[in-house]
Image (cartoon, rainbow, N blue to C red; front, side, top):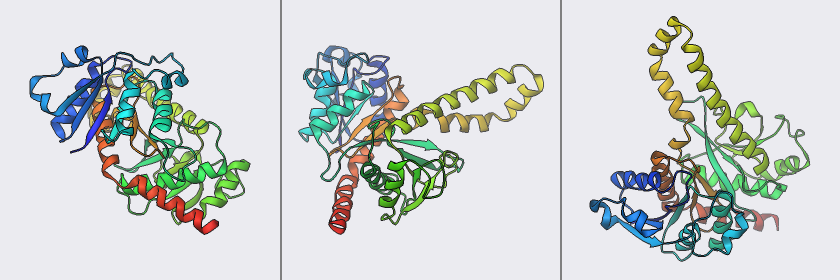
Length: 333
């Protein structure tokens, strides 16, 4: 049975949505939840019927969003430190946290360690596409703001492995985000990365911003600076479109009628752009499983983040990444 460590104290809205999401996950899948945080607060929110599937690990410190990520290494009694260490010690198969993302990333990288051959882990996230039921995986979206060409190559290898082993895409297509499709386009880093990525049979070349949502590729490679702006911009656009539609619908009786007839379409749109549907972003490249969730995650988001952790830890992705990087290293000396 999979064991997932969950930072019960780290989210913006306290422990309630995190614990509720854990309970919802337990209702749908069989696994062992290890909730890390203040025992009295956690225990008071758990119904008796879940007691056999939940373990509580006491942690009386919480890393605040305003704290520096570097301070997390010194605060060994914090909930995220103890949750990450459960994976390090092989007590848990994965960790989920909606707390300080920088602290989660730093602790996961330094305490759990990197996969052999990985220079820098990357945060990956799923983006909706115009093709029904299909998503594109973007990495990096924030772990590395200054990346070199070899880092982007590693992101391509890691993204390909995640798409195949976790998402179940047999032959994933990998694209490099640039300002033009031609191999001559881009900055010096992306041009060099292009040459390296050509050794991947899954690499289809450069893609532009308009390809992110059209489903033409399964994996999109970029550095964390560009990726984080892309992620935040996408979230902002989705939110703005929803508000614009609502605002204009109220102005016209005809529009209200149309909106009623389009309710199913709006529900599908809302579901596709809702971060809660994806749960969180895996930190790929560490020698374990760490899912970084949004600070404002609701119960549904936490539930789906736990499912991500279960799927990730059930796969062979880390071994595949190590083998693939070794293969390319051996081939290129």
